[in-house]
Amino acid sequence: MAQKPDRGVTGLPGGKPKYSIFSLARNAASYHQDWQRAWRAPEPKKEYDAVIVGGGGHGLATAYYLASVHGMTNIAVVEKGWLGGGNTGRNTTIIRSNYMWDESAAIYDHALKLWEGLTQDLNFNLMFSQRGVLTIAHSWGELREMSRRVHAIRLNGIDSEVLGPDEIKKLVPIINIDQSIRHPVMGGFLQKRGGTARHDAVAWGYARAADDLGVDIIQNCEVTGLKREGDQIVGVETTKGFIKSKKVGCVVAGHCSVLAGMAGIRLPIASRPLQALVSEPIKPELDTVIMSNAVHMYISQSDKGEMVLGAGVDKYNSYAQRGSFPVPEHMLAAAVELFPILSRLRMLRHWGGIVDTCPDASPIISKTDVKGLFFNCGWGTGGFKATPGSGHVFADLIANDRPNKIAAPYSLDRFQTGLLIDEHGAAGVAH
Image (cartoon, rainbow, N blue to C red; front, side, top):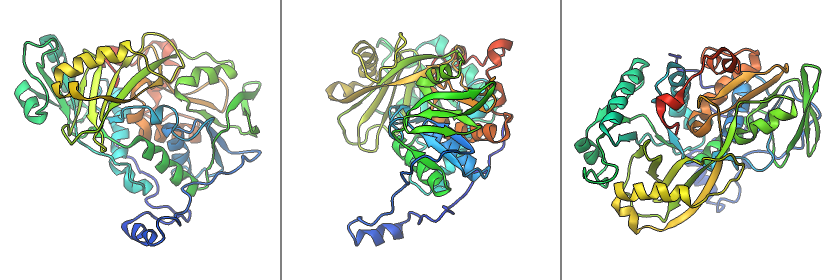
């Protein structure tokens, strides 16, 4: 199991004033009109030591750790839209590390350890809440399989415990444990260290900290081509002109296969919509995260009081960032049965994100046959929870041109060697 990593800088050494209760009080005197911009809006330089394509949480984290841990400050992050406008701003914010396989446990617990100190490291309130993540079982067979997984999870030093129906009812009073319902609650397993965070704040916090270390964050700059000379990457073509660089890291989630095609590379990726919705806000009723693998439903309550519900991945490939009716209807039918109070709520918003899924439901963190070209993708529905760990190990790969122990199993080579990390079979669902 990986050791707890150095988190990089603990303040903002580049010159930005720290956020604190004192700066909040000081700026209140001017009606909060004098806050410094969180990050600059520079024009791209002609050349960088590294270019990160993708301004979501993973891309910004990569740039931050390249600067703070590896001392690479001549870096650009290029984003075709606005920061966090892709999957970072379209997920249900669940964070956990209770994965079965050793390789998965290593990367996700590496991320969770970083999450636990990230607000202090970035000097930005990420609203990280370790409220616990409970996965429920609806049959004896599912409960027996959960018990097996709990033992495997504990062997990797990750907290996990099995609960019975009465213990679940005590933890979640609004849940229906009547055994006569279509999806009866037979038990479940709980990771107390799991929880949620504010997705927008993750992007903003990493962007502010990276900018303070000299990283150029360039929005509304779409990459239209990857330029190579032989087997060496030499830069990226963008809507703001050509940017020269001998190292390019691509972190664009659902569009990773499109970007790889620009360099003549085929990735084993399927991009599909994943839908979610929020209800109108109500008073606090749910202080943990509930997941159901059997019906592909997961629910938590936001700090504003909204019930945040997610479903399973759509059955068709698409780049559409919108919802459809059949998937949420299936999910809500089970949700209302398990939580009867939901039947009185109205839906407030409904959306979709694009998830990139590999055949084994595990990510790609890898070099390619093109020297200097790296890909971090294939996170499927597990991307948000991995954000700091993903950025940390991907930065290490780009800086040193070789994967560390945590990232090594996620090389593209595994699809040739057959050394897959089959989280489809182990986890049932990779939320």
